[in-house]
Length: 95
Picture (cartoon, rainbow, N blue to C red):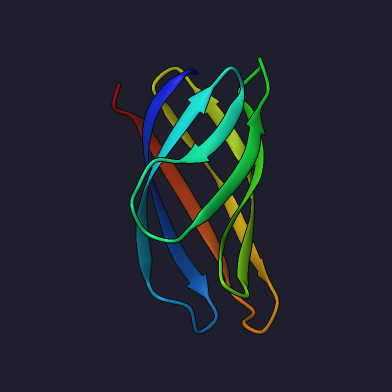
């Protein structure tokens, strides 16, 4: 699963922005943010494709779970902190 992934995060409940797109880099199972904005992305991809991590900016944080398979992936997310939101994400491998 190593490489660059384009991840779309869609809000399905709560008062968060409708959608975001992130560039995520996977290196040896570790996940990090691949863009310029002030996001902190942490997490792991297991050898079977299981994903667990978080995306944070300031006081806002979303906990992410799901699975990668081949060159795509999908899962769910939920926020912790001041805003209560949740939704789905999908990913496509770019490189």
